[in-house]
Image (cartoon, rainbow, N blue to C red; front, side, top):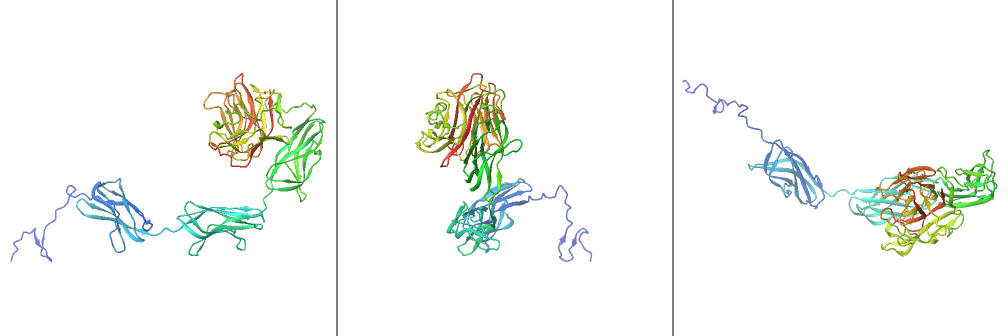
Amino acid sequence: MLSSFPRAVRIGALTGSLLLAAPVATAATRPAASPQVTQVSLTPTTAAPNTPVAAQLSVKSSACVTVASLGVGIRDAAGNNLDFPGGLTNQQICSQGVTLTTGTRSFPAGTYRMFGYYQELGGGWKNLPEQTLTIAEPPLVVKGDRLGPTTAEPNTPVAGQMTLDASKCFTAAVVGIGVRDAANNNLDFPGALTNQQICPQGLTVKTGMRSFPAGTYRMFGYYQEQSGAWKNLPEQTFTVAAAPLVVTLDRAAPGDAAAGAQVAGQLTLHASKCFTAAVMGVGVRDAADNNLDFPGAVTNQQVCTEDVTIKTGTRSFPAGTYRLFGYYQEQNGTWRNLPEQTFTVTGSSTADPAAPVADKKLIWREEFDADVAAAKWNKTTSSAYRYGTYNPDDDKLDRIDPQKVAVADGVAVFSAQASTFTLPSGKKAWDTGLITTENTAERFMVKTGDYAETRIRMPKELGAWPALWTWHQGGNEIDSFEYHPDNPNLLELTNHVVSTKPLPQKYWNDDSAVKPGEWVTIGTHYRANTVDWYVNDVKVFEDKAGVGANWTAYLILNLSLCSGDFHPGPRGGTVSFASDYVRVYR
């Protein structure tokens, strides 16, 4: 029997279904691809048990799409829903991305599946890729920040010190500092701490003292957990060896003399550690290297870290130029020479030291060979201080005490100590030394064209503020120098006479010329159109401002104490500096 179906239609051979020819899609009829929402990042990956934590989810879409909701889901091992609160609703997501920060919630210890999710406007839910969220106590991390000492003298008791911190607070059953020698013998420092809490803010441990023979050791911090487990912190090398002896010459004298005049030699020196010199004296050599040493060398002289001064007997020299130096003999018989300086002997007994500026003659001098004379210096008051003896307006703790300037061995020592006097600011003053040519019988003043110079030994103690400066009628101030040991190699050189802003000033820094405890020569040439500063006879600054044609002022040499506002204040004990001389050339 013939089929009645048209040829374009046939019965499916296997299914019996009607198969129709599918229409062919064209670019005009093909549906647009759905926007793809992708996850950029999801945090956190870890957290502490039972500690509230928020999640952060960043997503983006290939094309802008609005989702009904966006959030962060959590499932535990049993599949329970523990989602983070605080999702977004009706949120548009585009190619630049969206970041969601959820509300917080806490979780018990365990491992969780975490994922971003969103709901389409049509109601369909979509989950983004999962990652693991681990809830567990973070491991304890103990870190040693500092450990000392790194060196010591053989057979000399020394204490250990360690600073350490922990990632979270815990109590160590024991904490101390261990030492092992080359054979791994235990030579720990005594005085370990017990039941000591260590937290993130850190802890400093100081042990008892012990000594070690010469050698190289391994040193480390250690602690014991409450469980009994011992933990060692990273090791460092601890070297026990005799430190080299360094002897420093601070000052040698004389620098000049007159031919045929009897003069004595003098040395001021200190050492890096105490030692006893079998012999110590002052050597002199002429141009032919003949030995013309000063007589009266001292024997068995102890020298320590503080300055010591020795004086020889006297002798005379013919006119000429000599090399002068200190020397000492060690107990083992070895001879050591200290640095040389030039010693000039002139044919005239009236020879004066020269200034580094031309055509100037010495017209006024203070060599501090005797006590400070009242005719030349006023040690009690200064008009530069508002209250005469103290001046809290200038960030100073000074209270002038005439007893704090003492002359010995050819130098003036300015010292300062804490006072019982209370300043108007409420701070305790420091009794300190000052000398000025103001209100004296001489009433000596420097004037335009003069060159003033001093040689000083810089202070070592924080809070010290020595200066050579000028003052007259409430001003006329030129600071030949100001110095603060917290800037150990820096001199402040300032012209306060002019009214320009900023003031003509230089912070002159030289670690070879300016050092705490060392001597330096500083001079100032007060010229009408420029003030020039010299350090060790070398010009270091021209301010191009000057003092004008008719400038005059008194000299002030003093030790101030910082209040702590701009430089550290004094820490206690005695603060001091010294001056070898003050000279003025005209």
